[in-house]
Length: 233
Image 1 (cartoon, rainbow, N blue to C red):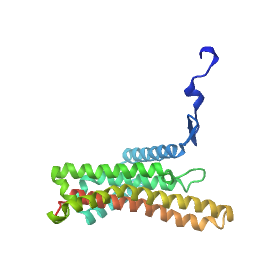
Image 2: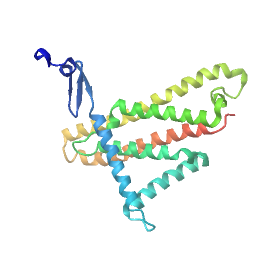
Image 3: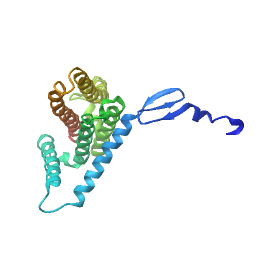
Image 4: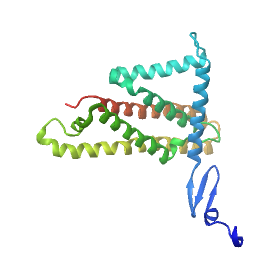
């Protein structure tokens, strides 16, 4: 550097796996690392299943077929045939969230969904996606979803429905973040109190809870997409 002075950006920026320091502000980045780790796991798993596809499925293919088939049947049974057109998003969403949640149960790893940024990103994408599908399916008539059953109540219902829809990403964000973050902290507390005896029972309980939280996010997203695909009455 000229005059022996370091570039200001280099002076104000430092990075490691846990955080990044930019202009004196510490920004946590480990959730980004574990999010990419979850994506890498799913890519490798997907390629492994694709490479070994057979008419007589092996264990891995059988597990994936049961998982994907079960989720698709659940969506069709509860949201109708139209939901098949967006099931690829819902299926990937569930598996991705579940993988992130389960990372928190692996020693030395953290669940990316225990960070508000991760859950907010998925909630906002879901919000934008189901509204995009609604506009794509119904065109300008999609506005009828916000007008209520009576023309006389339409001005009031539009305000109420807009507030309700805008609250959906906030609800998705805080529900997933709060539950996963709370479970992570509880595991740490139980481990500090009784490293083995206190941790193992709660570990398996939280394994079920993490699966449930992924399913709840998936189910609510399915309901929003079902409403967007259906005709307003």
